[in-house]
Amino acid sequence: MSENNKLYPMSFCPLEDEYVWGKESFELADLGYRDSLIREGWLASNSISELMDTYMDRVVGDLSFSLYGRQFPIQIKRISCEGKMPLRVHPDDATAEERYDALGKEKIWYIISSAPGAKLVLGFAHDSDATEMLDGLQDGSIEDNLLYVDVKAGQSYRIEPGLIHGAVGNLEILEISQSSALDFCIYPWGAALGTDEFDDALTIIDALDFIEYRHKKPMLCKSKRINEQIDELVSLKQFVVNKIHLNEALRISSEKVDTYSVYYCLYGKARIKTEIDGLEMVYPLEKGCTVLVPAEVDEIILEPLEQTTSIIEALGGCDIKKEENERGE
Image (cartoon, rainbow, N blue to C red; front, side):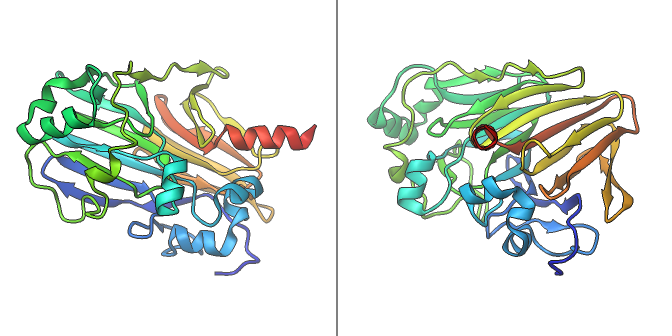
């Protein structure tokens, strides 16, 4: 890899795992055991971790690099549930750093599609505790105290650290989360787990003190209109997620906020235009495709190639925006 060449928008080869309940496809991941490979250009076949090791702040921006170091801060995963997805839970940043020297896992689930009867499991229906939960795991009665939430396409839910969660039925989910491999399996619904589906070292006992046992209302994300084409779905310190309704060409500049951006095409078809060393370059963004635009790329133009084109945009969180604003004052 040449450090003199300018970085460019890049897509990745998905990493797919198949289980008894459905599939998980890592669209963009920097996890060590799951590292996405760049699909095209002079960086083709290099992993996201190799990209970060070499180009660091040029990929994610100065402030993101100062906060998160050489690991790419977020991951994108597509989940295809066709049964009962094992219940899981994740720690927050403080617990993850103290115990595992890793990031915690804040995330959102965007519902791409949902068949009749499909539900998310989001915590407990009634307040519980560790003893009751462990007893319920043994005899299956935990299923009677889970909060089942009916969902429909286009909704998004915030899943905080400590919340046990899963899915039941047929639905497609796009997960945007922190880059963390700390997935603790809580309940596989009596089914056999796939090889390497969970890390055996991350046990239920280790999770008992950070599980949220109180009943909590599901955190349905309420979109905020930014302009005619962009709705903000969630703004967290770790990342911001927007939904773009691409009806016409949209110019996006990184001059005000020095950070990366990631685009996932939900529906339709688009292309990304930018200037690299004085030349106009064009990159496809088709349905199911993920493209990373490094912080070094000053400006892009998103152009729709089909009328009903919808795109999820993920970028550095409000911590980065806050520090940028303070630096500019």
